[in-house]
Image 1 (cartoon, rainbow, N blue to C red):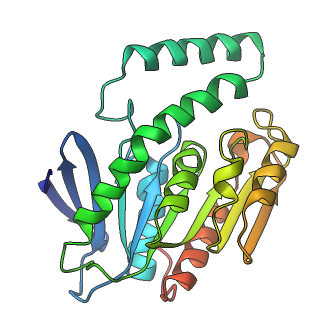
Image 2 (image 1 turned 30 degrees about the vertical axis):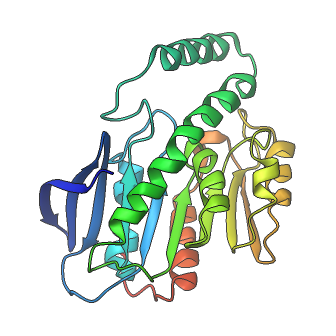
Length: 254
Protein backbone atom coordinates (compact mmCIF):
# COMPACT_ATOMS: atom_id res chain seq x y z
CA UNK A 1 0.00 0.00 0.00
CA UNK A 2 1.63 3.24 -1.15
CA UNK A 3 1.23 6.51 0.70
CA UNK A 4 0.79 9.94 -0.83
CA UNK A 5 4.05 11.89 -0.94
CA UNK A 6 4.21 15.61 -1.71
CA UNK A 7 7.33 16.47 -3.72
CA UNK A 8 7.00 20.21 -4.44
CA UNK A 9 4.86 23.18 -3.45
CA UNK A 10 4.33 26.67 -4.86
CA UNK A 11 1.69 29.39 -4.62
CA UNK A 12 0.42 32.01 -7.07
CA UNK A 13 -2.80 33.81 -8.01
CA UNK A 14 -4.62 32.63 -4.92
CA UNK A 15 -3.87 28.96 -5.52
CA UNK A 16 -1.45 26.53 -3.86
CA UNK A 17 0.02 23.90 -6.18
CA UNK A 18 1.39 20.70 -4.66
CA UNK A 19 3.00 18.00 -6.77
CA UNK A 20 2.61 14.49 -5.40
CA UNK A 21 3.28 10.85 -6.15
CA UNK A 22 1.36 7.77 -5.13
CA UNK A 23 3.57 4.84 -5.98
CA UNK A 24 4.61 5.49 -9.57
CA UNK A 25 1.61 7.71 -10.34
CA UNK A 26 2.48 11.43 -10.46
CA UNK A 27 -0.17 14.06 -9.81
CA UNK A 28 -0.89 17.60 -8.73
CA UNK A 29 -3.27 18.98 -6.12
CA UNK A 30 -4.44 22.59 -6.37
CA UNK A 31 -6.02 24.20 -3.28
CA UNK A 32 -7.18 27.65 -2.16
CA UNK A 33 -4.29 29.73 -0.84
CA UNK A 34 -6.41 31.20 1.93
CA UNK A 35 -8.63 29.44 4.39
CA UNK A 36 -8.22 26.14 6.20
CA UNK A 37 -11.83 24.99 6.17
CA UNK A 38 -12.58 21.61 4.62
CA UNK A 39 -13.76 21.82 1.01
CA UNK A 40 -15.00 19.39 -1.69
CA UNK A 41 -12.69 17.85 -4.26
CA UNK A 42 -12.86 17.76 -8.06
CA UNK A 43 -10.92 15.09 -9.97
CA UNK A 44 -9.94 16.17 -13.49
CA UNK A 45 -8.89 13.94 -16.36
CA UNK A 46 -6.67 15.44 -19.05
CA UNK A 47 -7.06 14.91 -22.78
CA UNK A 48 -5.17 12.48 -25.00
CA UNK A 49 -1.56 13.48 -25.59
CA UNK A 50 -1.76 16.01 -22.72
CA UNK A 51 -0.60 15.89 -19.10
CA UNK A 52 -1.58 16.92 -15.58
CA UNK A 53 -0.36 20.53 -15.91
CA UNK A 54 -1.50 21.17 -19.46
CA UNK A 55 -2.85 24.75 -19.79
CA UNK A 56 -6.39 23.39 -20.05
CA UNK A 57 -5.96 21.71 -16.67
CA UNK A 58 -4.38 24.69 -14.92
CA UNK A 59 -6.99 27.06 -16.36
CA UNK A 60 -9.92 24.92 -15.22
CA UNK A 61 -8.29 24.40 -11.83
CA UNK A 62 -7.92 28.16 -11.42
CA UNK A 63 -11.65 28.61 -11.98
CA UNK A 64 -12.60 25.84 -9.57
CA UNK A 65 -10.12 26.79 -6.83
CA UNK A 66 -10.22 30.58 -6.76
CA UNK A 67 -13.77 30.96 -8.05
CA UNK A 68 -15.43 28.22 -6.00
CA UNK A 69 -13.07 27.38 -3.12
CA UNK A 70 -12.65 23.75 -4.26
CA UNK A 71 -9.65 21.41 -4.28
CA UNK A 72 -8.67 20.01 -7.69
CA UNK A 73 -6.50 16.96 -8.43
CA UNK A 74 -5.10 15.69 -11.73
CA UNK A 75 -2.85 12.68 -12.36
CA UNK A 76 -0.93 11.75 -15.49
CA UNK A 77 -2.74 9.00 -17.37
CA UNK A 78 -0.68 5.90 -18.23
CA UNK A 79 1.85 6.75 -20.95
CA UNK A 80 1.30 10.50 -20.56
CA UNK A 81 3.16 13.37 -18.93
CA UNK A 82 5.88 12.09 -16.62
CA UNK A 83 4.93 8.45 -17.19
CA UNK A 84 6.87 6.51 -19.84
CA UNK A 85 5.13 5.06 -22.86
CA UNK A 86 5.09 1.31 -23.25
CA UNK A 87 5.88 -0.44 -26.52
CA UNK A 88 2.12 -0.98 -26.91
CA UNK A 89 1.55 2.76 -26.47
CA UNK A 90 4.09 3.58 -29.15
CA UNK A 91 2.51 1.11 -31.55
CA UNK A 92 -1.00 2.48 -31.02
CA UNK A 93 0.15 6.09 -31.41
CA UNK A 94 2.04 5.26 -34.60
CA UNK A 95 -1.11 3.62 -36.02
CA UNK A 96 -3.14 6.69 -35.06
CA UNK A 97 -0.72 9.06 -36.80
CA UNK A 98 -0.84 6.85 -39.91
CA UNK A 99 -4.65 6.94 -39.94
CA UNK A 100 -4.66 10.72 -39.47
CA UNK A 101 -2.22 11.19 -42.34
CA UNK A 102 -4.42 9.05 -44.58
CA UNK A 103 -7.64 10.77 -43.52
CA UNK A 104 -8.97 7.47 -42.18
CA UNK A 105 -11.40 7.21 -39.22
CA UNK A 106 -9.64 7.45 -35.85
CA UNK A 107 -12.25 5.67 -33.75
CA UNK A 108 -11.16 2.09 -34.53
CA UNK A 109 -7.72 2.93 -33.09
CA UNK A 110 -8.52 5.46 -30.36
CA UNK A 111 -11.42 3.54 -28.79
CA UNK A 112 -9.46 0.38 -27.83
CA UNK A 113 -6.40 2.46 -26.92
CA UNK A 114 -8.42 4.63 -24.55
CA UNK A 115 -10.21 1.59 -23.13
CA UNK A 116 -6.85 -0.02 -22.31
CA UNK A 117 -5.65 3.14 -20.57
CA UNK A 118 -8.91 3.39 -18.62
CA UNK A 119 -8.55 -0.17 -17.35
CA UNK A 120 -5.20 0.82 -15.86
CA UNK A 121 -6.20 4.31 -14.72
CA UNK A 122 -9.46 3.67 -12.84
CA UNK A 123 -7.90 1.73 -9.92
CA UNK A 124 -5.09 4.31 -9.83
CA UNK A 125 -7.63 7.11 -9.50
CA UNK A 126 -9.47 5.26 -6.75
CA UNK A 127 -6.22 4.84 -4.79
CA UNK A 128 -5.44 8.54 -5.26
CA UNK A 129 -8.92 9.48 -4.05
CA UNK A 130 -8.47 7.28 -0.97
CA UNK A 131 -5.18 9.04 -0.20
CA UNK A 132 -6.49 12.57 -0.83
CA UNK A 133 -9.45 12.00 1.46
CA UNK A 134 -7.02 11.33 4.29
CA UNK A 135 -5.90 14.97 4.11
CA UNK A 136 -7.61 17.10 6.77
CA UNK A 137 -8.46 19.84 4.27
CA UNK A 138 -10.45 17.34 2.16
CA UNK A 139 -11.63 14.63 4.54
CA UNK A 140 -13.44 11.34 3.95
CA UNK A 141 -17.04 12.53 3.82
CA UNK A 142 -17.11 15.46 1.41
CA UNK A 143 -18.66 15.27 -2.05
CA UNK A 144 -16.43 14.65 -5.08
CA UNK A 145 -16.90 15.83 -8.66
CA UNK A 146 -15.27 14.78 -11.93
CA UNK A 147 -14.38 16.83 -15.02
CA UNK A 148 -12.83 15.28 -18.15
CA UNK A 149 -13.06 15.73 -21.91
CA UNK A 150 -11.78 13.31 -24.57
CA UNK A 151 -9.46 10.81 -22.88
CA UNK A 152 -10.71 12.34 -19.63
CA UNK A 153 -14.17 11.02 -20.54
CA UNK A 154 -12.87 7.61 -21.63
CA UNK A 155 -11.32 7.21 -18.17
CA UNK A 156 -13.95 9.18 -16.30
CA UNK A 157 -17.04 7.21 -17.37
CA UNK A 158 -15.83 3.89 -15.92
CA UNK A 159 -14.42 5.73 -12.89
CA UNK A 160 -17.72 7.48 -12.11
CA UNK A 161 -19.63 4.24 -12.68
CA UNK A 162 -17.38 2.43 -10.20
CA UNK A 163 -17.01 5.18 -7.62
CA UNK A 164 -20.00 6.09 -5.41
CA UNK A 165 -18.09 9.01 -3.85
CA UNK A 166 -18.42 10.98 -7.10
CA UNK A 167 -21.72 12.88 -7.08
CA UNK A 168 -21.59 14.74 -10.43
CA UNK A 169 -19.52 14.77 -13.60
CA UNK A 170 -18.81 16.88 -16.66
CA UNK A 171 -17.92 14.85 -19.76
CA UNK A 172 -17.64 15.31 -23.50
CA UNK A 173 -16.24 14.49 -26.91
CA UNK A 174 -15.80 10.73 -27.00
CA UNK A 175 -16.98 7.67 -28.86
CA UNK A 176 -19.67 5.48 -27.23
CA UNK A 177 -18.31 2.10 -28.37
CA UNK A 178 -16.44 1.05 -25.20
CA UNK A 179 -18.48 3.25 -22.85
CA UNK A 180 -22.12 2.55 -23.72
CA UNK A 181 -22.85 -0.17 -21.15
CA UNK A 182 -20.87 1.59 -18.44
CA UNK A 183 -22.65 4.89 -19.09
CA UNK A 184 -25.94 3.10 -18.52
CA UNK A 185 -24.83 2.46 -14.92
CA UNK A 186 -24.33 6.18 -14.18
CA UNK A 187 -27.19 8.00 -12.47
CA UNK A 188 -25.48 11.09 -11.01
CA UNK A 189 -26.06 14.50 -12.66
CA UNK A 190 -24.14 14.85 -15.94
CA UNK A 191 -23.20 17.77 -18.19
CA UNK A 192 -22.00 16.65 -21.63
CA UNK A 193 -20.34 18.83 -24.28
CA UNK A 194 -19.89 18.04 -27.97
CA UNK A 195 -18.94 19.76 -31.20
CA UNK A 196 -21.73 19.58 -33.77
CA UNK A 197 -19.32 19.55 -36.72
CA UNK A 198 -16.65 17.33 -35.13
CA UNK A 199 -14.55 15.78 -37.89
CA UNK A 200 -13.12 13.10 -35.56
CA UNK A 201 -16.15 11.92 -33.57
CA UNK A 202 -19.34 11.56 -35.62
CA UNK A 203 -22.30 13.59 -34.36
CA UNK A 204 -24.38 10.44 -33.99
CA UNK A 205 -21.68 8.89 -31.78
CA UNK A 206 -21.69 11.80 -29.34
CA UNK A 207 -25.48 11.80 -29.18
CA UNK A 208 -25.53 8.04 -28.56
CA UNK A 209 -23.14 8.38 -25.63
CA UNK A 210 -25.17 11.21 -24.09
CA UNK A 211 -28.35 9.17 -24.51
CA UNK A 212 -26.77 6.18 -22.76
CA UNK A 213 -26.36 7.89 -19.37
CA UNK A 214 -29.11 6.79 -16.97
CA UNK A 215 -29.00 10.10 -15.08
CA UNK A 216 -32.34 11.79 -14.44
CA UNK A 217 -30.49 15.12 -14.62
CA UNK A 218 -28.30 15.36 -17.70
CA UNK A 219 -27.66 18.32 -19.95
CA UNK A 220 -26.30 18.33 -23.51
CA UNK A 221 -24.24 21.27 -24.76
CA UNK A 222 -23.76 21.14 -28.54
CA UNK A 223 -21.59 23.84 -30.10
CA UNK A 224 -21.02 24.61 -33.76
CA UNK A 225 -17.48 23.94 -34.94
CA UNK A 226 -14.91 21.21 -35.33
CA UNK A 227 -13.16 19.04 -32.75
CA UNK A 228 -10.72 21.66 -31.46
CA UNK A 229 -13.20 24.56 -31.63
CA UNK A 230 -14.91 23.96 -28.29
CA UNK A 231 -15.66 27.40 -26.83
CA UNK A 232 -13.88 28.47 -23.69
CA UNK A 233 -17.21 29.24 -22.05
CA UNK A 234 -17.92 25.50 -21.89
CA UNK A 235 -15.28 25.24 -19.17
CA UNK A 236 -17.03 28.03 -17.28
CA UNK A 237 -20.34 26.18 -17.63
CA UNK A 238 -18.82 22.96 -16.30
CA UNK A 239 -17.38 24.87 -13.33
CA UNK A 240 -20.82 26.28 -12.50
CA UNK A 241 -22.39 22.85 -12.89
CA UNK A 242 -19.87 21.15 -10.59
CA UNK A 243 -19.98 23.95 -8.02
CA UNK A 244 -23.76 23.70 -7.83
CA UNK A 245 -23.71 19.96 -7.18
CA UNK A 246 -20.84 20.22 -4.70
CA UNK A 247 -22.70 22.80 -2.65
CA UNK A 248 -20.48 25.75 -3.62
CA UNK A 249 -21.13 29.14 -5.16
CA UNK A 250 -19.07 30.67 -7.96
CA UNK A 251 -17.92 33.81 -6.18
CA UNK A 252 -15.39 35.26 -8.62
CA UNK A 253 -13.87 34.83 -12.05
CA UNK A 254 -10.07 34.39 -12.30
